[in-house]
Image (cartoon, rainbow, N blue to C red; front, side, top):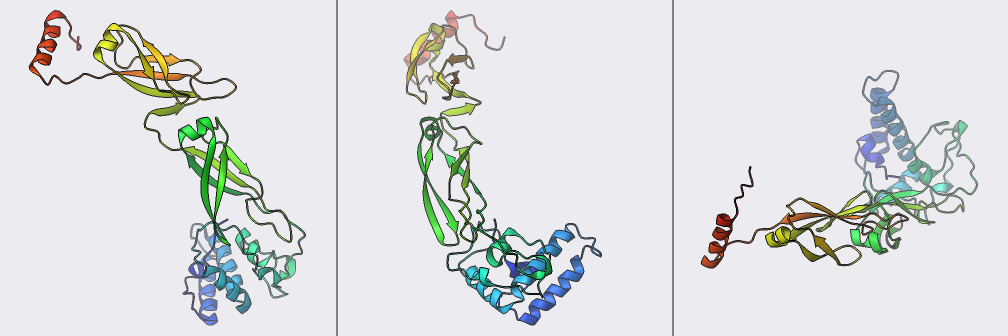
Length: 300
């Protein structure tokens, strides 16, 4: 869930008086009331305005919210729930509350759930929601497995987690860490942390499905005469036979050298013929001899 800046929603400064807050609420409520407003998203804006006013109109709730906000939170920051010493759950909305309002998870995590008649609904132990985040890992770590550290910010401050990466995980898959999600309510267990995996760019290898793609530079004579050359794979170097007469762009397949799994993918090697520069008189003579010997037009 995301932290909400109630002052920003009402368009007032944090040191605004109670009268200023009430005035801003009334002005915005008239502007965005769904029965009269033609603004896009007026209904959702109206709900946000009501929620902000409900949080700030009471001096005790506002004081508790201000203490939380002073911790450095800004609108849109990831928020995992109030700290252990948070006193919000002690608030009683009473009969003057906004009965039946559907307030956000953020509001309820601070002040409790509002029920019919405005009183805070009684709740037993409630499991916290799952927290979703992303992790970007090197291609080699995903291939072999390993560990990565991530930093998360919650109400108690920053924390660092060591994440175990299973070998052969694919981009878009998730890693679940039990009990590392949002805090539970009334003694309930915390939710889980769900990390969606993404790969960092690699200078040599590209993943295409379960195949690994590599561009391999070769010399003109290796392409023309054929050769056996070492080729890097994520599992280590292997020998690759280049057929004689290979052109630049030719694709060769190393079976089973792709992404691991029940059925491993292949590695696709694309040849790229690199031509050495003729820098000496002798080298220029050799190139001229080739030109004289071959009746070859590459553009024909």
